[in-house]
Each structure stands twice: as structure tokens, then as C-alpha cells.
Image (tube, rainbow, N blue to C red; front, side):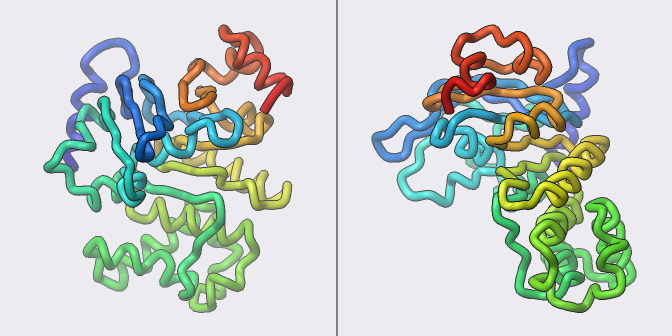
Length: 268
């Protein structure tokens, strides 16, 4: 069990209120001189789906990428404030970023399968994390594809190119690849925005099923999608967290006028 898992487990029993798995306090992010995130404080509970909504450029994807330190890859980025997973400061100098990204998986807006076979798309990452025995790799490949509701569609062509799959199948393969290494958290940045309605519905059904095992944070521009799949919703505007509450309250009785204007289509 990782330090993150141990601290998360310990904090879960610390009180009657559900423990936060992800917590930020007064988090700021600057791109050079530009302040892109402004003092964001939020607590995200485990094994729920949290949606980040807001107009383009409001900071929701930037904030999402704070949780696995993907913003580290951008020149000139500076982060201040506190960002913790399972009680651990993930920006501490002794944090192993590779280990962090194993615990916090990511699914991107555009499906990005490796130019390898369906089988190797999943097996490659497993081997990087030390899983070598073929029988074990075979088992995890199958269980991951089943977990992504893809096994029945690809079980007879595991050794053909993943690039031959449809767009929706490629995105579910990327989800299978993410869950194969058993993260605690899965970040999804507009995972269905490039998909047709049928493929989108399959991905949404998959997200609802995956929350039984994983904590999921999703960025979406689709208001209907947020209402269908998320338990809690955070509304961002101009780098600020305007409102965070249960999804039903955000969409039926928001506390902030800007939230109401956005979810009712008055702007955005």
C-alpha cells in the first residue's frame, strides 16, 4: 500500500464526515506573469464522480492537471498553495512524480492509443511498472478490457493494431490502459467531446460503473453530461472556483447568480 493509500485509509476513519481524498487550499497557478488559477480551495470525496464545468479558458483543465502534476511539463508554470491527495502534499520535494501518476491516471480529450496492438497498449504500461509474468499480464489485460466494457468487442483481435478501432473504442481502450495499473483516481479531460452520441453514451455508462472502484474527476462542457454522470459539480469562471455543491443543487438551485446564468445558457 502506498503512502497515499495509507494516509487516505487512516483519514477515512477519523470522523463521521466523509474524508476528502483530494484537497486543495488557496491554490494559485501562474503561467509566467498570468494568474490562471486564483486561490482555489476544494475537497473531493472518494469514489464519486466530480464534474468541473465552466466556459473555455476558465481554468478547469489546468486545475485538473494539478492533481497529477501534468502542469510541471509546461515552462514558466508556478504553483502556490496546498494540494493534497490522501493527506499527502503532492508538491513536496520528496514526492515521486512517476509513482504519483501511477496513482492518478489520466484520460485525455482525444484518444491517444499507442501505435501498437490492442494487447500491447495495456501490457506495455504493466511491464514498465514491473509486471512481467505473461500469465499475470494476460489476466490484467483481459480484466482491464472487461472493466472498460471492451473485451467482447476485441477479444478475437487483441494482436491487431489499436489504430483500427473506432474512435469510441479507442477512448475505451485508453480508459482500460489507465485502469490496468489500478490507480485510485482517474482524471478525464473532455473524454467524450470527439465522440458520436452512441459512443458518448457508452463512455458515460462506463464512468458510472467505474466509480464503484475509482474516484473520477471529469472536465466537461456538456451540461447534460454533467447532470447524467456526476455526483458533485464545481463551476469555474475566469480562474476562480465560483461554486461547488451536489450536481442536483448546482443545476436546480445554485447559490451564485453566475452559476445560474451559466447552467441556464445565458453565457458560456
